[in-house]
Amino acid sequence: MRRKLRENRGVTLVEMLCCVLILILLGLMLHTGIVMAAKSYRKMIAESETQLLLSTIVDALADDLRYAREIVTEEEEDSETGGKRLVSYNSDSYGLAARLEIDEEGQIAAGGRKLLPAGVYANGAYEVRGMEIFYDGTCFIMDLEAGEKDGVISAKTRIAVRCLNRKK
Image 1 (cartoon, one colour):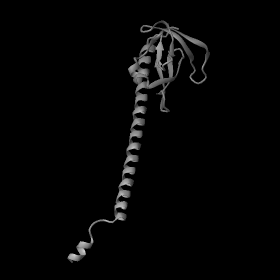
Image 2 (cartoon, one colour; image 1 turned 135 degrees about the vertical axis):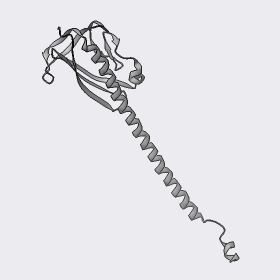
Image 3 (cartoon, helix red, strand yellow; image 1 turned 30 degrees about the vertical axis):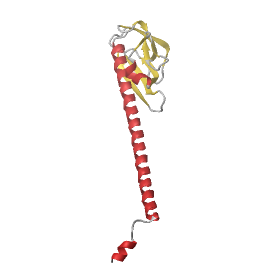
Image 4 (cartoon, helix red, strand yellow; image 1 turned 45 degrees about the vertical axis):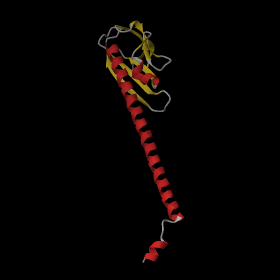
């Protein structure tokens, strides 16, 4: 019995290589899982930030458009919404003949002033990609699209806001 134990002094080279190979494979699987989880997390954060940006913009625009006065629209009526495209309006917040537009930074400006601070856009990480506002005589119909500045994630929304000052 003692002679048998003296002959088995450790693991062979093949057994050691098999153990190392198994540990490498487990490490690769763990790394792949972590990378996929991080990518999924970043995507979820971007989607929720985009939705939050849209919600904040809609709230700010709705508050301002609800009390718009002296609304100026284009002559041509939009076939889809039944309204005319908004050109300008008088606003308590942005002055006379305020025009809503997307500036070079992808932020909404009204009457030459930014609608929201840069922090709402995550300091340039997100932008407004599209904005159309129509007025049918009683309601504003807003179509907005926002997304990542350097990414593919975006969100769209359409909302109607009743104008309480119906004078044109």
